[in-house]
Structure formats: C-alpha cells, structure tokens
Amino acid sequence: MKIQVPVQKNQKYDVEVTDLTYQGLGVAKIDDFPIFIEDALPTELVTILVTKVKKNFAFGKALKINQQSKDRVKPIDGAYTQTGIAPLQHLAYPAQLEFKRHQILNDFNKMKLDVEVSPTIGMDKPYHYRNKAQIPVRMLNGRLQTGFYRKHSHDLVPIEDFYIQDPEIDKAVVIVRDILRKFQITPYDEQTHRGVIRNIMVRRGHYSHEMMIVLITKSKKLPSEAEIISETVNQLPEVKSIVQNINPKNTNSLMGNQNKVLWGKGTITDQLMGLDFEISPNSFYQVNPIQTEKLYKLAIQKAQLNKDDIVIDAYCGIGTISLSLAKVVKKVYGVEIVPEAIEDAKRNAHINKISNCKFVVAKAEEQLGKWQKAGLKPDVIVVDPPRKGLDESLIESVAEMSLQRLIYVSCNPATLARDAKLFAEHGYQINQPIQPVDQFPQTVHVESVTVFEKSR
Image 1 (cartoon, rainbow, N blue to C red):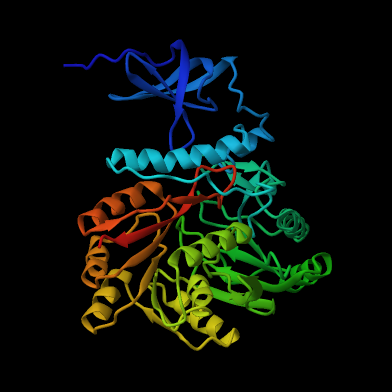
Image 2 (cartoon, rainbow, N blue to C red):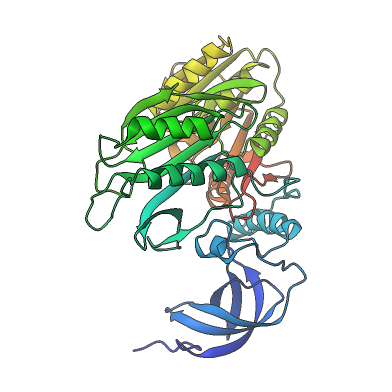
C-alpha cells in the first residue's frame, strides 16, 4: 500500500518556515509533514518548488520569499552556498550564534536532558579566519582551474576569494595556480586517473606569518620543478616550506603517505596559547587560532586546576591542550591513536622545554582502561573527541576511576548529548551552563565546553 504524503514533486506551495535544521536548511510543514528548504529562514513566508519527496519528509527550493526574516542578510556570493563553504552566509551573525546555541539545546532536549546553554562566544570578524586551505585543481574549459566542488558533486566551481580563509592564503592559491598554468602542468582527471596536480594546500601561521605550500600530485615527478619553486619563492616572500605530497592512488582521500621537501623546511612554526608548535603537511592543527585560544582558555579555567593535579588529555592530537595544561599542573598524560600526531606532540614538548607530559599512541578508550588498572588516579580528564564522540568503554573507565571532574570539548552537539546521557547513568551531572564557541563562522558547525562533575 502506497503511503499518502501531502506534497508532490515539481509542485509549488506557499509555506511558513518555522525552524532551521542542524545543516542550516529551513523547515516548513504541510499537515505535519516536514519540507527542508535551502536558503530559507525561520519566520519567512516562501513559495517553494518541491524537488524530492521521501516517505517521511521532502526537499524544496525557494522560488520567492514573500516575507523576509529580520535576520536575513545579503549573501556575499552564491558560490559559497553552492559549494557549502559558507552555508549560513545569508543569516546575520548574531542569529548564527543563537542558531548554534539552539542546536545544543535541541540535541539535549531530544535526550530529555535539562541543561543551560550560555550565549555562543563569537568573533569580532567572523570571516577570513581559516589558516589552512585544501583546494582542488581541475581542467575546466581547457584551462587549469582552482575552486571548490559544488555540493554533493565533483563539479568544480571556480573561486578565487574563499571568504572564510586568510586572504593571504587566497592570494597564494591564485599565484600558485598561475605558475602551474605558465608551466603547463596538467591537472588530475578523475575519469582517466591521469594528470599531475590534484590539489594545492596552503598553511599560514596566524602569528608567525610563515607559509607552507603543499603540491599534492598523482605523479612522482613534478615537471618544471625548479622553475615552479623559483617563481613561487620570488612571488610569495612568506613561504618557508614547499612540499610535494605524492598521492598515486585512484581515491578520494586527499593526501598520500609520501612527502618530499622541495624547498626550505619540512615544517612551519606558529604560536598558540603562548607556545610554539611545529606544523607539518599532515599535522592536525586547529584552523581558527583566535577561537581555539578562547576554547582552550575556557577548558583550562573550567577544569579548576592546581599545581599538584594530574590530568589526562584524551584525543590529544599534536599536544595543543596538553602542553597548555602542563604549565599549570604537576603531570599531563596525553593519548592519541595517530602515531604522527604523537611524534609532533613529543617534538612540541621538546621545543617548549616542557618535561611534565607523557604521550602515548593508543586508542583513548583502551589506554584509559590500562591507566585505570595501573592505579593512575587523575584529578581531571579532558576529552576532545572526533565527531563520533566517546566510546562507551571510555565513559565506563572514567566512572571506575571515581573522577571528580571531566571537561568535554565537543565538535558535535548530537554526540555530546548522547554521551551526557551515559555519563548521567554513572552519576555525572552538568551543574554549570554549557559554553558554545564559534570556531567556524558562516558554517553550521559548533564547538562547546561542558563540565561533568560526579554527584557527591
């Protein structure tokens, strides 16, 4: 039996938008049946065309906005919405911050958990913040072109100003593009798996202004290598490192395993929380240093640490949080599954003359269990997990350690709320407001700091 739905594909409807999804799509309902609409905001009256109908929901396209939201602003460039670079660019920045706060509340409400969420900490300039670019290179109309893929496709949209990136990085991408054109370097072709250059990566230190150019190639050989290096160094005086990353596989993964330093150093240095960090092509390093410092300062402040404390930093990456914590406590234990990240963490400890950190390569949930069995009694644990959140066994290890306080740095409110429910079952409560921080303005992503405390 076919289920009757109240809308049909390719039909027009007049609707009122009542909400935004976590992906930034407007939500309207016809007979309680939800329709998700790109570029539509709550309170707006919109004429839509239904583009796709599923059993429980549909997608629509806004044809005409009959009544605009007071929070709507003029988009900077349609390409930023097409490619998903800045999906919230049509929403005024104060409303973006409220959307992110609301997102966290929504996810906790779904879990039937009652929490307070503070106003989101935003940026004075909510654009030009990214210190790293990974830009695809493709042939378009017979010419080597850089830009970004249209959403849900591999069609390249040519872009020179990426709006959310450091403008010096945008300039560098265009200069490198023009040098590659000059020496007739062929872009990678996804259909034939031929060609030389796949992507251009640029990293720039926010404080140091040191720049790294990474040319990601399919081939081992880079034609006109000496000339490309010479022109790049002449035109970009901030460049301290030029690296070729070789990725010969027919794959969507961005980088290969082999890095070849073509010129300068294999790393650049930048500062975070008053510490020096060496960054290699593959290093995970926060892309928005201004907001990262606010996030880490909050985490440290909320941890209420003193000089005799022992702290575990789970998912420690290259040691950015661990080394910041090390300045105020007795000992920090960091764990991370990526071996290269732990090498970076140890090197960064050495650079900063920090000797009270121990870094281990392991799965965080397994290592916590080992430390717990070995009798390690931390005063505080800091977790900064990937989007999938915490493993249940890690939460159980925390409970078995009878820990008083855990600081959760989250990049996904849905998994944070799910984990909060599990923590609650082990007697851990959230007694102070969750603090969102806007790490990625103009996008739907939200980071936050939450303190879990053991009920006495």
